[in-house]
Image (cartoon, rainbow, N blue to C red):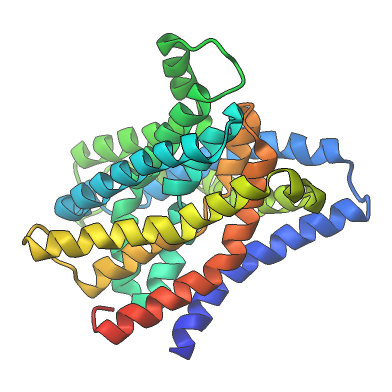
Length: 335
């Protein structure tokens, strides 16, 4: 069990340390506040789209995706989202905080720490399964986040055309769509005698693919440092209620609902709950909120202070909740 905690700690501790580095740079006035916000914009428009594309393109085949598990996972995320929408109406009257709270309910850091966390819990087989589930879940996370943040923005006027435009123009969604299209096209490309593709980005255009990989690699560390640079402890006092509720929605409510529905599906014979599936669900339901959620909130004029605080505190407290889930499911013999 010590090894489980060690893997969880190794997956999450770098997030906290990079946030602390950004905070240190800010209080020492190494960079002005405007610098942190400018770099955040760079990461949102360039680094994260590259990360989304590379994550999808790195899959060996689109056929690797477990359709049955995907169907369950997506259904559970929709239900968690609906619960989050209801709770957001009850928790706060501030319009631009509602979308942030809805995000907190369903949007985990599955794209970034899902792989190392799944591998830490189950080894290579766990990370392999996790990789096949990232495409549909990350697309869902980003599309629904854009919808929630747009609907509950400070702009009192709401139009479907504007909402669709925001979805289409979102850099993360553009990166995901490009990755899906590239995967589909790759399935149609013939192979050489040795089994390698006649054309692939990584094989035929390595200079381009390597560049995308370089940009993708800096997405998370850059955003975490910039997030720490904008962190303001005094801001907690004005958003205490929403912050506590958002953290509880992400780290307690989402895992309880997700696994509760999973056990019900197993009972009715709708789902096979293998150890690999349990490990992936811990990563999907129990990991802290995605770092990009704070960047997206800032770009879409939601309450980015609340969004940033939720990232920091869920990253910190998820160390405890992930460990508790791992112990619980190991003791039940399903992990």
